[in-house]
Length: 356
Image (cartoon, rainbow, N blue to C red; front, side, top):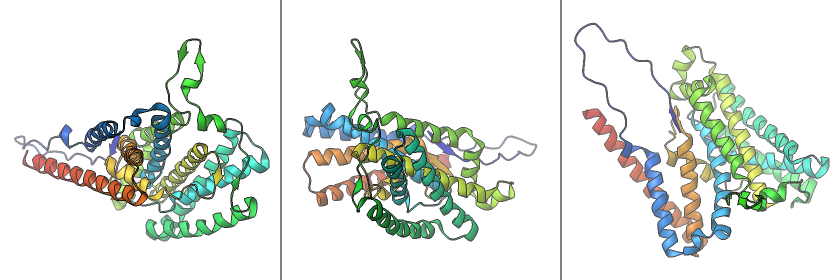
């Protein structure tokens, strides 16, 4: 779902009606449609080249698990992009949250859910701290979160060295292995079996729905978007801009913590490497999906499609046995082409609207 701020309509003066306003964006100019078409085309190409791309155990189930992780990572970045900000520490926030979870499981013996809640609290506090610094000092979010990223890199190394000899936590709570290995098809009732969907996917789906509802229907979400569209106007309208900045960054930290948990569940361990590869995908999903870097407009559905497209490219090229350097090159070219085509489509649509 896509959410944009709306400006109050002008009251027309008395007299003959003026020309009609610009029409809505045509369907073909919708970036979500372009992503969907490209996604279908890539799936068809990869399937033709490697039929194993549609193999349930080898490809589809792991692909769904990866999409679940990186969709939540994209939502974490989307939360601050709504303000026109950036969170360069999204991966380290995930790593710190995962450390807190691993420590709670290993040393306190808490349940799976309790450890998850502890990790989410840590992620939320880290995000809120970044937002508080930004709102109080006026320093650019890029600078603040990049500095936090460097600080957390050192802190995470120290903590893992202190508590795990720099490796990973060995303890796993009950239910962790099921999240990693099971699908709904493994739980049958008589002759009725569920689909081959990993158990981590519904967790990501809940996050997607929650963020979508927040920005579309809640006052908090609308005010965050209005702050991102025009901070001065939002402040003059009575919106507590500083609080909204802190809350948006806190939401980003919470979602980063959730992504860290999902990745740990997929990997089967809470290690210091969690979150290392989060930064680039955190931007690719929202930007490919139509979220504005300048703030004021987000697309939750587009973020999910963007994350899905990125992971399909990774999986397909991996099955084609591309080397790592080649893999990164072709992924970059495909994504650059997708962004360029989307920009061309958007410019053409805007010109047609202007002529209407």
